[in-house]
Structures are given as structure tokens and as C-alpha cells.
Length: 229
Image (cartoon, rainbow, N blue to C red; front, side, top):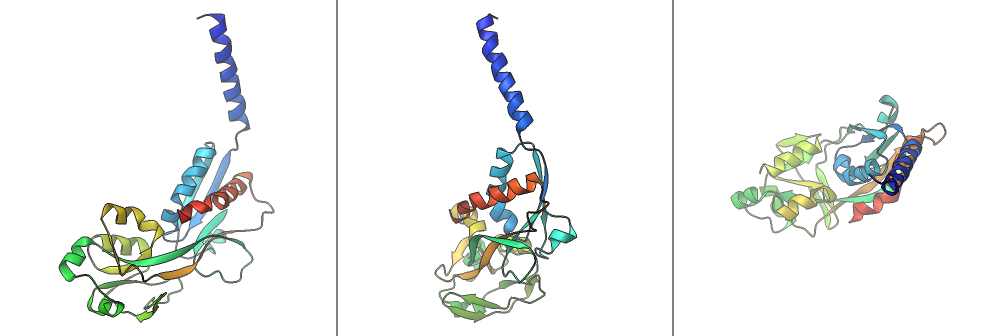
């Protein structure tokens, strides 16, 4: 190998070592309420690609942002009402839900043509983290009182059950775009939506925050516009 070939390689290696030594390191723990794990995934991939020496651990829980203290989390992505607390809360996006069912379910039971038709269908409803049963769906076109023989506090279970043809349920629009595009799920009465409160990024005061945690928070806030795409 000629000297003129070696020198550029050494310079490249030296620069790589410098970049790696100055790259942020550490670990950070992020809490995610049910469904927020799917909503936030692309944002977390961006963060991990940008900071390859930082380790990220996620903790999924329906108990809400109070888990920040229970599990030593650095931040929490919360969907729904933010009650008064000592934490900092920054809005990420607004989450809406729509009605979904599998093609197999619709083939077997028909496609509802109006909201009242839902009373003739198998509905899957949520038990909220507060313990409250979500038995009134407040659509943008008006409320609908619902009942169900299948109730769960796990949005992941309800999503799976809908995919398997168990019935119709309200699920976050952002988290099901791929399934609708692939034909795995159908939108039911698509003009009817339920708007939840904002998705929030919740964290303690920046005082005493680690550098890795600060970088995660800044990255999530900066990239949150992707959630609207």
C-alpha cells in the first residue's frame, strides 16, 4: 500500500475515534402508556440512530405518568387527560380513534351503515386505567352508549382481537395505518371519530436530569411532527 493511500485512511480512522469519544453515552428509561409504544416507535428509532452509544429502555404501563417515580423513569409518553401534577408536561400530538373491524368480521356480520347499527354488532370496549368502563363513545357526531361481552384494560389485546375478527372497536388511528393500508383492517363509519386529549411527554424538572435523558426529551419534541404524517 502506498503512503498516499495510508495517510487518508489514518485521518479517517482518527476522525472516527474523535467522533466516537465525543458522542453522548449513558442510558435512559422511557415510560409509555398503552398504544403510545406504537405511536412513538419511529421517533425512538430516530433517537437511537442519532445517539448510537445511548441505551434506551422502555416500560409500558397503563398506570400513567405516576410510574415515573415508581420505576425510576426519566420521562413518560401519556395519552389522555393530564391532571395537575408536579411534572412538566409537553404536548406531542392529538390522538384520534376510529372504528375498525377485520374483513372477515364484516363478511360474516355486515358493514354498519350508521352509528345505531353498532348495537347489533359485537363491540370490544376498554377498561380505563382509572377503572372506569368506557361505555360511552363520544364521537365528533354525537355520543353513543355501548355495551360489550368482551372488555379489557389492554389496548394491545383489543387490537389483536379485532384483527382476529372478534368484533368492532375504537382504536388509535395513528397506530393502525399500516393495517388499513394492507387490508388487514377496515375502517367502519370513517366519518365518525373520537378525539382524545393530547399525547403528552411528561418528565420531572430538568434539574438533575442526565444528559441522555435531556437528549431523548429534546429529540422526541423535535420529531413529534412525524406523528401527524
